[in-house]
Length: 81
Image (tube, rainbow, N blue to C red; front, side, top):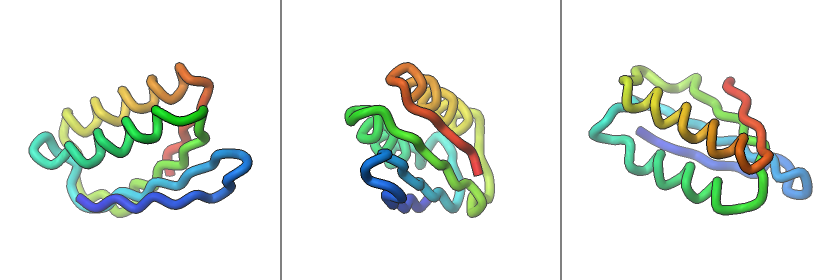
């Protein structure tokens, strides 16, 4: 799995996170760490680009749901692309 993070609009705190490859339980740690880093800061508007994802297992789905919940709890937003 590869991650690429890009700030789209700094004042509005809009972030594009592109994920490619496979999101599965054995390879999910980098994604967990990235979501944790994103959630530590101010409320973010996250655009999550999953166009390059080849496969995702239940652990991957769980991580996406958890991240969305955490971001929304801080007043952020998540858009899936």
